[in-house]
Structures are given as C-alpha cells and as structure tokens.
Image (cartoon, rainbow, N blue to C red; front, side):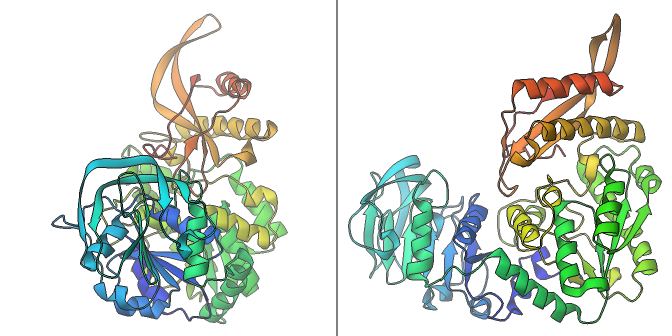
Amino acid sequence: MLLDDWGRIGEVARLKSESSSRIQERILILDFGSQYTQVIARRVREAHVFSEIVPHTISVGEVLSLRPRGIILSGGPASVYAPRAPKMDRGIFHLGIPILGICYGMQLLVKEFGGEVARGTRREYGRGILRRRRASALLGGLPKNLEIWNSHGDRVTRLPKGFESVATTENSPYAVVRRENIYGLQFHPEVSHTPRGKEILANFLHKICGCQGSWTMGSFVRRSIQEIRQQVGPHRVILGLSGGVDSSVAAALLAKAIGRQLYCIFVDNGLLRKGEAESVRRIFGRHMNLHLTIVDARNQFLRRLKGVADPERKRKIIGYEFIKVFEKAAQRVGRGAKFLGQGTLYPDVIESVPIAGNPAALIKSHHNVGGLPKRMKLGLVEPLRQLFKDEVREVGRVLGLPKEMVWRQPFPGPGLAVRCLGAIDEKKLSILREADAIVVEEMKQAGWYYRIWQSFAVLLPCRSVGVMGDERTYDNAIAIRAVESKDGMTADWVRLPGDLLGRISNRICNEVKGINRVVLDVSSKPPATIEWE
C-alpha cells in the first residue's frame, strides 16, 4: 500500500506501529468538527508536548496502542442530542487517562456520564468572565476571575453523579467541571481571545497529565533520523524536489539520515517562478552535493492544461502528469529504489482529506496527498507529515540550512497554475512570472519578504481599459496578495506600506507588457483561501 490510512480516515493505523520510545509524551485530540481543532494541536505543541489529531471514531484499542498521556475532546458544530451527533467509544472515558472536553467535548462527556445538556435560553458567544468557585489543578496559578471566549448555544444544566462545578460564567453555572482527572470546559482556551488559555492548557498537560514538555525540533530530528534509517535500511529513496521549504527540508533531513542513498528529481513543469530551475540546480546540485536530476517537462504539462479553467481539474491534471513524469525519471535515475520521499505537511493532509465521520469538508486537492498511484509500488517516507509549516522551518534551522531556504515563502505544488486564473498558456504564465518576480524583489528590498507568511502576484481572468502615453489600452490586471499566518490554516491580509505598494504597481505596469492595472487583495482566510485557486 502506498498511502497510509490517514490519507483516508486518519493516521491511527500508521501511528499504531510507533513504539513508546519514539514519542514519550503524546496527547490525542479527538476531532468533532470544530474550526479550532488544529489550533488546539498547535497550542499543545507550543508547550513542547506532541499532539495528534485523530478521528472521534477512534476505538479503545487504538487509543491504548498509542499510549497517550492525555486526551482532549474538541468542540464541534453539532448538538449532542442531534440525530447524527458525532459520538465516541464510551470505553475511552474509563481508561483512567486524563481527559479534557472543550465545548461540545464537555457536553458529550457530561451526557455520557448521565448529566443533562439543554439549549441555552440565550446563546453565549464572544467575551465572557470566568469566576472560579473552588480550587482545581486545571486553574492553578490563575486569578479567580478570567477573561475567556465563548462560542456555544447548548449548555450543561445538570451535572452527572460525582462531578463538581469548578467555575461559572454569567450564563453557565457549569463553565468548568471535573471528576477526578476528567475535566470539561464550556469555553475555548485554545483561541487567542482567551488571554490565559495557554496556561489552562499547560496546567492540563503538565499538572494533570504529567507531561514534562520534552518534545522539541531537536529531539524530533534525532528521532526522525533513526526512524528513517530503520525504515529505509540499505535501499535507495527518490524524492520529488521542488525547491520550496517543505521538499528542501525533507531532502536535507533524508540526506542527513541516509546520505547518497537519496536521489532527488526536480520536475520543471513550466509553472515555476522566474529562475526556479537554475536556483535548485545551484543550491542542491552543487552546494549540497545531492544526486539531482532536472527533467524539462514544460511542453507536456502545458499541452495537458490547454483550455482547462476549473481549478480542481487543473490541480488533478498537474498531479497526474507529475506522477507520469516522475515515474519515468525514477525508473531511469532511481533504479532499484524502494521508497518515495515527500515533503507532505500536516495542513496538506488536513485540508485535502476529510476525517472519517467528521463534518469537515475537503478544501483543495494536494497532488502528494491521496493522489499517488498504487502502481508505483514504493514505500512512502514522509518525515514532515506530522508538522506544521513553522515547525518545518525550525527543523531546517536545526539542520543548518541557510536563511533564504528556510524562510522562503510557501509556494503551492501546482505552482503558478493556481495563481493564473482560468485557462493558462505560456503567454499568461510569462506575464505572471515577471510580475511575481517584481513583487518578490520589492518585498525583499523593503525588508518585508521574511516578515510575513506569503506575498505574490495573481493574474486575473479579466481585462480593463487603461491609458499608457496617449493610447488606450485594454489589458490584464494583476492582484497583489500578502498575508500573515502561523501555519497556513488561517491567515489575515497584511497592511503593506502605501509607498511599497505604489512601487510594485508602477514597476509591474511599466515593465510587464500586457498589464495596465494592479489591485490589492484584502481578504482573510477564512472566508477566502490564501491561494486564489
């Protein structure tokens, strides 16, 4: 099998094979469809404890095989009394493992233990004040009154036997509840709107679960090197190298583990940024001394994409053609290879494949997640699969990669195809390539490039009237997209200085033939995505 079970229903199957020595401290997060589930995972990791999101349908046996120090039940949009409300294996409540239920997670555990949950007389949303009524390890070291963030309609109206109320809000007499090492929170400690929420979660991790906080990127690198060597043995690994942060760090980590057993293939699909192929050859072929093969497949990709406007079709065609080209190159340069290396990240997995039983929907396809054919018959090595983008950058720093590589802004797998809206051709790509190069150059010169998550140009599928000199023009428009994010799951548009935007606009209009208008994208994620397609 090429892909593990997480590609379809979660990572449980693959994680079951991990020994307890790999990750000494693990927190499982059962996902009930909350928009904040990934935020919970991040907050736990920020406390130097490894967290893993798993389907809420996980069984008792699977939980035991993973040996977690604690379990967090996420929030969710459903009511616990709804006909198809997501449920969990009740046996998990009786394993003796510390549990923290958040919002829906709290209501679920209260109901399962025999308490009552009802629709609130008024919805509790936004800022609230938490008032502690009795001592608790969960709120240890915190003031009696705390600012918190609520987002719920239902509320607990009667506690099960053995539970006690620890804290209240104006509308919730049971805002924090506990029974032994099982806790429930009606509010969201993971969001930034709960200023002391990190401390609440830290109390759960350290004081209740007994975690020491030993999970760091340095320890991750050391464990990963050992695991890669054990998995690969004496065999070759082939890696699709794009030159972006993810594949670059994956290549560096694999090279650290297995050296010249690694064979890198760079596919020039005609959808790359200006000077991309030359940069990859210089950095990886010459300076890092890796086995590197560059395949010129520009004509093949553009021929298959001719006339295709639908963004999902474009992504799938690019993914399919990539595999065809990669397979052919692998047969030639990676003869005898037993493994395929990839720079897949956690957000790629989360956005690409809905978790079984989770109401969360697929956002977009990633050609390296769920799209690789079984006929390749290669074992899969994805050393970064459990990491968010900022964690990958930290791995790169630990490995000693240069700043310009580690802090390079993300670039999508389908390349400029998802920044050139509608059907694409070489002329449109050339226009976009030149405009994007200007954006990058000006952002770097102004000191903004490394300060933000992403900044790039988008070629819009429309033309507008302009005036250049004494002549009327009817040319294309470029949109400038600049966003700030921590992990790509959410993002906000960046308020760039007006003089910088003015220079970018003037240069694009003056230097890029076919452009007479530049606009600014001021949309956040959500509701928009970072990329336009």
